[in-house]
Image (cartoon, rainbow, N blue to C red; front, side, top):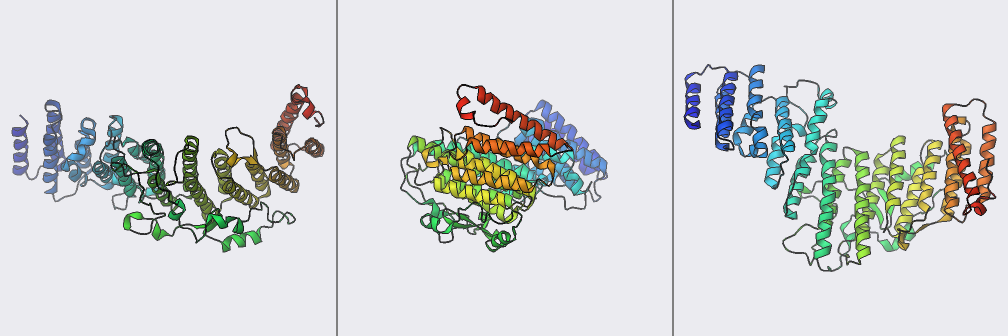
Length: 574
């Protein structure tokens, strides 16, 4: 019987006050093994062992030696595999855990999360989420105690740290509830814990939370637009912090000119930089100038101004309070929290959110669903505007700028239901960013990439977002050609001309009306001339020549094909 044995252990602790601490933990571990073996699932027995160890160890005046710490860790780890999440119900576990030095608390917290993940347990209650995250809080913060086993910076670059954070990142994917409001409360509870982590840990906490919200958003979308009757129209634009502007006066205040002055030398950006500095913290959008919210507006848990207010929506079943709109609000707050610590990650997540909103808008359009109460197109545009703000205000590293422009282009090309005026404005702005990069080769590559924004023939793209602006394509290609010519002080940059030829060929095959065979023939002649003048072939030059030969072979194949022979006949083939 467990109870007599437990009482006997208590009597031993009372009679032998000088019993070493490690022996106390060892005895309680032995008793716990007995309970687990013969009384499986008996939580009161396990809690009694943990409580007994805690009370006995609290009476010890001396600190814990390494042997005691090891035995206490063994005692705490023993029931994890069998109990998993049920261990949170035992107050003795959390009390005894608190006696360990900070690094060893991390160790036990990692074992707990590992046991939960390996047993396939699911978390179905917000209070359980809160208990778990409080219990493993040592994994969410830096060690500020005097018990550091290693430098925190060295620790964060160690394999142990990444393994710990791997299990942390899996927590949000264990949340499950048939009730969507309960599930949202769990996500909200996790948010309160995760937003306080440092920059190193935020990619293991808030980022997984954002991606966990995406499938949840799809679930809410299906519920809302399959079951809910049409709602009274409310303007989503009222939700945003707009500088008194409206969509109606957009055409009067946005500059859609791609290149500010074609006559200036391309490396003269001083005037443009000063102009950007004067307009810091704002970006031109189709709804005016949107301002990034100040720090005091970002924490909605303290009652400050929210990024955008959620209006009351009619027609929603009373048993379901959460809506798509509220989830997009939630996502915006999460990404704002990330932006304070990890700018590039926040930038990428803004684009991801914009894509999700556009996908929702596409489905609504295809099904002819009344969705004026939740304008997904406006939401998508707002996320894009926020990403542009982040780019202008906080992304200054040239390589990061180049990566960001590439991501923007890919995101814009993925949109299927964007309003044409909005798409044109964002495309022009993106091309302006490309033209302001520091290095001319980078400018050339990115402007060439941006040319894809202005002409694309895809049957799945609706007429409202038809990408057919041949003149803009020509402007981009001519600017890229001018930049490539300015870069030819180094022969290794001849690859820029090859890339431009590739782009010209693509638009020629897409039947872009302003791209004719004369452009291709002239560019091929120019490239041949440059290759003739090269004396020493570097590795970059050899790669460029191989690319060039592939393009010429492609043109030759087109000339021999009956379908394209007439179109390609005038084109020079080498």
